[in-house]
Picture: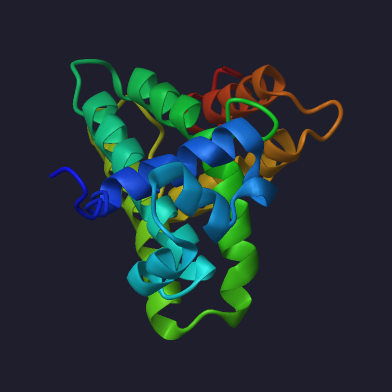
Length: 200
């Protein structure tokens, strides 16, 4: 309405804008004032919606994880061997490169989590739990079909995700000598030896 007050954008639009700012400008440029300018809201209005920057970051991570979760579900339910779907899981897990926006945000949220309340920590654990459950189910399926060696799917998933997290942090921070392709090669070799006994 002409001369009327601009309606606040939907929350998802705000979260998408926050993620876009991280991708384009880096996390350090994501302030309440800058985000408010981006979406046509005051920083005070944003604080009213989110309460704190920590909550904004966690909500943005949850939004990003929701999109990744949908993509992961599509990859893991397609008609392909367990090994092919496991490779797709790994490919989705590992950052695209230094300053990957999702991993940049993930690292920041986890860094702040040491001071977070129980609700925030439970929500972060739920994010990790979804990745873990999907990997356990895929490993168990591969074992039951005889594609993978008999392994304890839960224990193997825990160790595999620890490996993926360590390598992914190296990629996300741009550690020299650890680029995405090297990491994927290491993980493929590990999976080949541990699950197939063939060295990849």
